[in-house]
Length: 412
Ligand code: BGC
Image 1: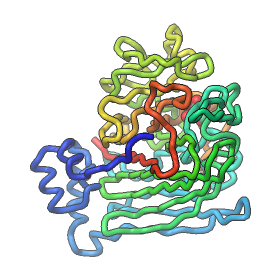
Image 2: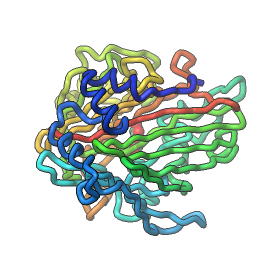
Image 3: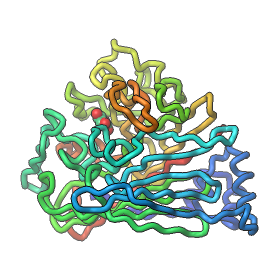
Image 4: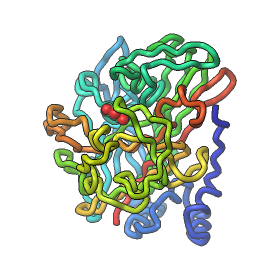
C-alpha cells in the first residue's frame, strides 16, 4: 500500500504561489483560500471583502439539509453546502454523490456545472455514476480476477467481460452515514460507509470515510480514507460530470483541457490497459498544452480514440504521487469558468461522456446528449491488482488508505 500521505498545506502553497502571496494568505485566511487561482483577481477581491467582520458582508458558511427519500430501510437526505461567497454544492448521502455545483461565471452569475438528477429516483435508476463516489475499486479490473497476496480475487464482471467501479451495487448505490460540519471558512460533510466482508466479492470489512469540504475560493476538497480487517484492494474516486458552460444540454467539446501528464495508458479492446505507459507527444492524447476536448476526439484513424469511443483513458500524472499537485485545468471560453484539479493520486481518468446518448433525462428535464459532460477521475491506474509494475492498490490491516483531491472553480 502506498505510504500514508502527509500533506503540508504550507509547503504546498509555497510550491504553487509566489512567496509574497503565500505569506499574505498565511497571515490572513486558511489554506483553502490559498487555493485561489492567481489569475482570478475579481474573485480574490470578493473574498477579501468577505473577510471583513461585518456579518452582512461575511455570511458564515452553512450546511442545511432536507429529506430526499428512503431506500434499503435508510433515510436519504440532500445537503446544501454554501460558502461565504454564496456558491453552493449539494450532496446526497445516496452514493455520496455531488448533485449540484453552483459556481459563478465571469459576470458573477451562478449556474450549475455538474450533470445529475432532481430526485433520488434518477440516481437509483440510471447507470453512469453521476457525481457519485465509486468504489471499492474505481475503474476496471480485467475479467474481475486477480491474485491478492496469493489468494484469488473474484469480482462480478458487471461491464462484460470486466469488473467496473465496484460491481453491480458499488459505493455509488448505497446509503452513507452523513455528518455535517462548518468552520469559520468552510462548510463540509463527512460520509462514512462500512462495506462488509464479501460485499461485491471483495475481501475484508472496509471502513470508508469521504469528507467533502467546500471552502473559500470555491474549492471542493475531497479527503478519502479507508481501513480494513483483511487484505483487500481500494481505489476510490469521484465521478462528477462537469460542463462549465452551465448549459447541461450542450456538449463539452469547446472546453480547453490541460492535463499535466507526459504519458497515458493505452487500452485493449475491452478498455483494460495494455501495460504500456505511452508518451502523449504527437497523439490526440497530448493535453500538455490547453487543447479543445473536441479537437482530436473525432480522429478515428487513431486506434486508441476508436477503442474509447473518444477519451476514456487514464493519464500517468507528472510529479510525485502522494504529493498534492495541480494535475489538470479545464476552461470554458463563453462563461469564463475554469476548473483546476489538484490531487495526491498517480492517475487521472479523463472520460469524455462517450456513453451518454440523449436518452437520460436529467435535471430540469434536460436529456443529456452525447458528451454533455466530462469526468476527471483522480485515481490509481486501472487493473492495478493485475499489474505489479503499477503503483499498488492493495490495503492490509493496520494500514490506512488516504487520498485527497481538490476541484477548484474560478473564472478568467
Ligand atoms: C469509465 C467508462 C464508463 C463510465 C461509466 C468511466 O469512469 O471510464 O468506461 O463507461 O465510467 O459512466
